[in-house]
Length: 496
Image (cartoon, rainbow, N blue to C red; front, side):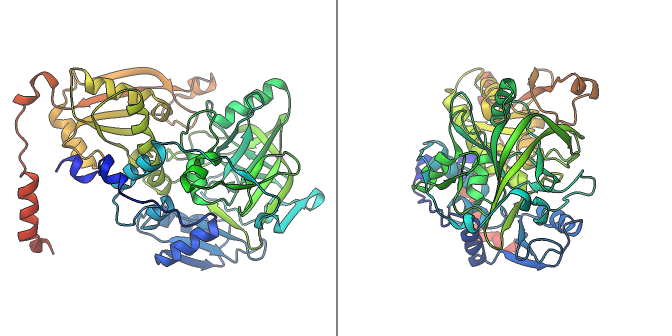
């Protein structure tokens, strides 16, 4: 079966009418309940039980969303929500029909949102549910929230896994929303780790170079759509708030923090506001990361000194702790990053792209597959190299595989069949040295990490029929699409 039969083309995707039916996390919960995909669990502890339960459900793409309630020793009514991106609700989260498969979902996401990058600036308001509780001064105590210890070897409680940090470039004045892990240090301080090269890290480094404190917000319980965009490799200089406004067709309503002036959603669940001071560091980590390892160990990292906590009554923490992939994090990144990566490749002028998939087993970074209709000699090589080094594909990549358009790039068995039958190890693999990686990369040698050398190589594998004799390549042993359809209609009952 060809890729085209599984992935809607631009015309098919354009015929879908998106509808994002929620604006905040509570509205999302109501929509997920309509799908029958929410389960509430009471009385589990943040010390270990929530993390243990989360590990069980986050690997199961059919498991429900879980809301942990009545967590002992925390703010009455506070909750933790995990596993938002599974089942039918992953389509609902992005505003598309629940019957779309994952390749159709990523193509619809790309066509309606990423191909246009429509932007609507946020609207500043002065009231909203987030102001139901405003805590400042001696009353600040972030430890009262039900932030779990997610993994047994973690160095502490992580209140920020499904969160995003809000910062403003001190020179260019644009606002960034980025997802970085956030660890509770004490009642009034949280530490957060940002990999080199990320937009929030660029902002922070600029403030550090000026020896000035950086204003920052951490949105701990935002709506899932804004969180997903904050997780994505959106273009430099563009605020995720503007993109979310464009996707919804209306501005995100934001309130400006009383200490920093930074914007946060008026209907968020929990927001921490404060400053990151130069040279105020504390040990952060270790933390079980998205690569499936404790690869970054622990180190001194900057802290956010909390000046204010804003939260709704009965506040909800959105939890998205990474596990060994495939897991929830890999599922949502696969959909969004595949769409963004295809846009990057096509915007670089590469024609004939029929599908892209950033595979869950590589946590949507380490293994990328590009399917294309070959049009000229070197086409597959060109596409593979662009995929490995464009903005979306460059960070902590490992393998890029290019396949013909009769292969479904999301199907690992089909992809590996193409690799073992259409590629030749001597002639089909290119190696790129010193690519952009991260301290989270488990394969970088300890001595190179100690020296600050966070780079790694890339392999680009051409698993296409060799262009110059592709028409002489042996025919595939499978029926035509029409015969396959007829066979399933007549004899599909034999598999029931």
